[in-house]
Length: 222
Ligand code: SAM
Image 1 (cartoon, helix red, strand yellow):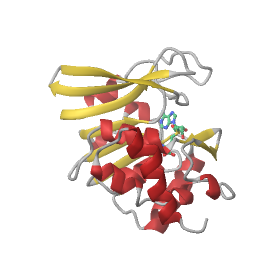
Image 2 (cartoon, rainbow, N blue to C red):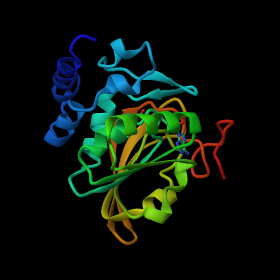
Image 3 (cartoon, rainbow, N blue to C red):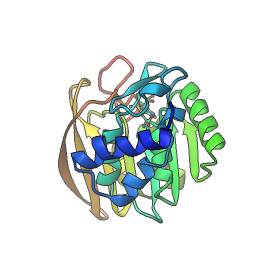
Image 4 (tube, rainbow, N blue to C red):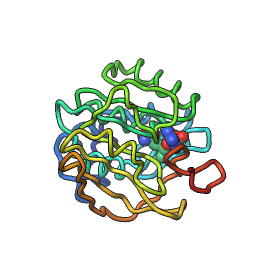
């Protein structure tokens, strides 16, 4: 790729800002993080197209527009503590780390988590803490969070994630009965035991596999 900076700026203009994402911090962060470093070797030339790409272990790095849309929807701002469930390549966590104070991220595939950690180290992104495990249970030891993003589709918004929101915190999660398509929902904790829910439109994510997601065979986990 001859000019990655130019390719990033073009991606932000044509695929993200033109489609309605307005949050300046999100647009700036997307124009900063080198997405070509988060794709598989040989796929760099496709890094700035608006599409998901394979990252190994049968998983994908999400489409840039969807990453921007979810981060904007979660209202992530300076000073925030954020949790990402489904870190995959680490790209979305890297973008959020350029805006928030601290990003905690969980990925169930150790091979993907290790590759993501190597990328964070190489790029000097030191405010991201990543672990391998089942993120459908959240990360209770470091909760509460101002924002939680789930990058995989769940049958229901995981109860553990709602409970790990700070007051005023936002959970953005794809939800649906059909593993092939979901509705993106934003759930805001307005009081201790009171949550507002909004529908943000249709999306298509790989399934959230875990205790508060789907079982490996595609049925609902207990
Ligand atoms: N945000 C990622 C990125 O920027 O590359 C893309 C994520 S990919 C669409 C969804 C990821 O969620 C996959 O890597 C998958 O292994 C992971 N995942 C699924 N269920 C999970 C769970 N219970 N806990 C943690 N990660 C999970």
